[in-house]
Amino acid sequence: MVNRREWYYQGRQGGWWQYDERTMQELERAFSQKLPTLQLTISGRCYTVDFSQMVQYRVDNGHIVYRRIKHGSNVGIKGVAGISIA
Ligand code: V3L
Image 1 (cartoon, rainbow, N blue to C red):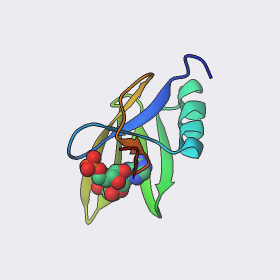
Image 2 (cartoon, rainbow, N blue to C red):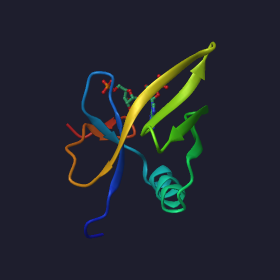
Image 3 (cartoon, helix red, strand yellow):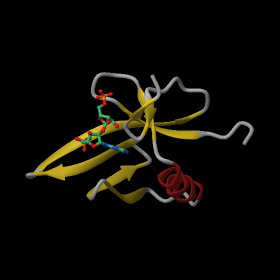
Image 4 (spheres, helix red, strand yellow):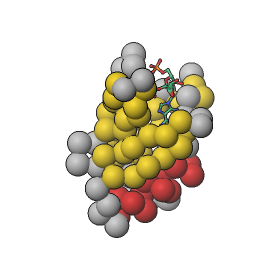
C-alpha cells in the first residue's frame, strides 16, 4: 500500500521493531477512531497503548514497564515483532 503509515515499538537497545500485521490493524483502527488508549495482548501479556504519550506499557509486579512507540513510514526497522530481518 502506498504511503501507508506503519506502527513501531522501540527496542531496549535502541532502534525500532514493527508491530505484527494484525496488531497494526488494531492500532490503526483505534487511532483513526481517536480512542485515547488500546488494550493489546502480546505473547499472553496485557499491554496498554497510550496514543497521547505514544507509549505502550504493561504492569509487572506493581511496576509499569514502558516502551516508546512510533507511527510513520520508511522507518528503518530491526525486524517485525521480534523476528530480525538482519
Ligand atoms: N510486539 C512483540 N513483542 C513485544 C512487543 C510488541 N509490541 N512489546 C514487547 N515485546 P516489555 P532489542 C522486544 C516483547 O516491554 O534487542 C523485541 O521484539 C519484547 O520484545 O518488558 O531490545 C525483541 O524481540 C520483549 O522480549 O513488556 O531491540 C526483544 O525485545 C518482551 O516482550 C529485544 O529487542 C518484554 O517486553
